[in-house]
Length: 180
Image: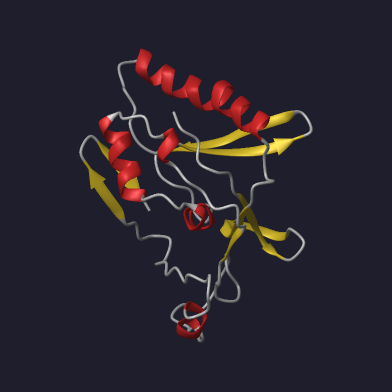
C-alpha cells in the first residue's frame, strides 16, 4: 500500500464553512495537512486493515482506495471508503504529482512496488468549484461560465471541466476500475 499526499475538502456552500453540505466546493493539498507520523498511523490503522480484511474474505484489492476521514479532537474518524478517487480532492492531489499517473496505476494493477517511483512537488495546490447560484438546492442549469480560457492560460493554473453529478466517467483497467 502506498499513500498519496493528503487533501482537505470543504463541503459547505458558504464562506466560513456555512450553509448546506454539498458534493464539495473545493479542496487544497499542502505538505502541512498531516505529518509523516499521522500519515503512517492512518496507513497502518485504517487503510491496511481494510485491504487485509478484504483479502481474508477472498478479495485481493488492486486499485485506488479513497479514505474519507474527519480529523477530530478524539482522533481520525472514517466517514467513507471509495474504490475511486475523491472529488474535489483529486484535482489538487494530482496537480502535485510529478510522476506519471498511468505508470502508477499500471504498477498498482500489476502488483509492482511503486513507493520510490512517486514524486511530489512541495507546492501547495487548490481546487475551487464554480457552481450556479442556489446550488445545492434549486439552481438554474445551463448558465455560461466566462473566463475559463484566460484562466487556463495562466502559469500554474489548470481548468477542470465537470458534468452534472448524474454523469460518471471511468477508465477501465485489467482487474480494476478507476473512477474519475
